[in-house]
Length: 60
Image (tube, rainbow, N blue to C red; front, side, top):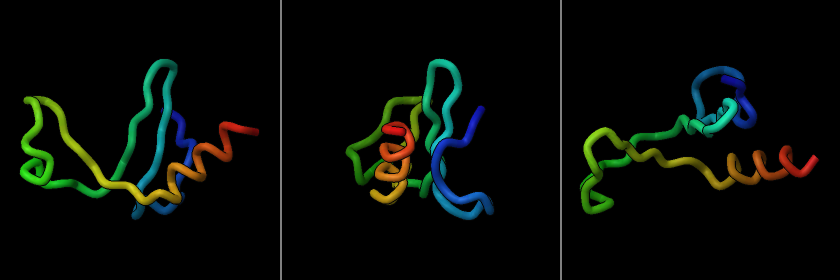
């Protein structure tokens, strides 16, 4: 898996990709905030700046 956005020190949200998927590392969200989640799924919160960084790099 390749990191495509985020910091390099391991202590912040990151964006990864492999051949067919994106994987996001972020801050855990309480499922109750979202009205529950299906079994096997989880939700994370990421800063807008991570998405903006990813989009800038994809546009290169």
